[in-house]
Length: 263
Figure 1 (cartoon, rainbow, N blue to C red):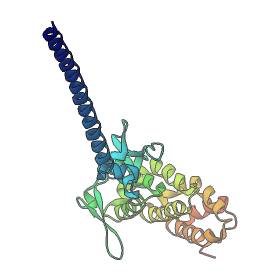
Figure 2: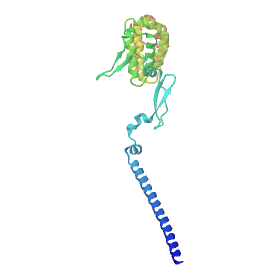
Figure 3: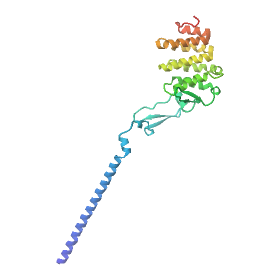
Figure 4: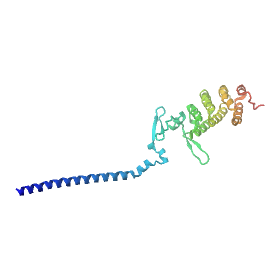
């Protein structure tokens, strides 16, 4: 009887000891897993990628990962939108869209002193319609390289052989575009429009007289600004020079204070 009781006590102790060992083992495993997870989290927080996320660099603004390309369906031009800084998408202008798609058959060559245009083919072989009108529309641009490409492209296209015959038929469509540049609030845009008007008068001569009255109103308003008085007066004189006596009558009707070059 005593032997059986002793034997039962031994079995009970073994069970208790086994359960205790199992609990100790499982507790050790849990502690080990927790330690491993903490070490992984600490190592990941110290990784270079996490440091970059915590401390973004100024150049990250230009990183393609922070740019959301928005497709403008009408022009198929992708405009970068900085979502991190909350800037709204801006549709490109007509000229910028055409230039981005390669619609202007020239490229800008940066020089140490000044820039120049390199045409894909001789400008005299290019159709003026609609290229000349497109370049005139670009005169209203305010950002580089569009400002230079439009201004220089317009000038060089008018210098090619046979430019007069190609330009005169386009005057009804060209004049409203030049007028838009002349009424623009930006002074540099106005100056480019004024120079383009003078260049146009040299090529088309008296053919410009029928459209001149549509352009003189904006010139008359700008004459009140002292900084534009001299360049506008010089431009009017060149318009008279290339437009003849007919242009003088039109100029005097819109700007009575104008003094003829013949005086």
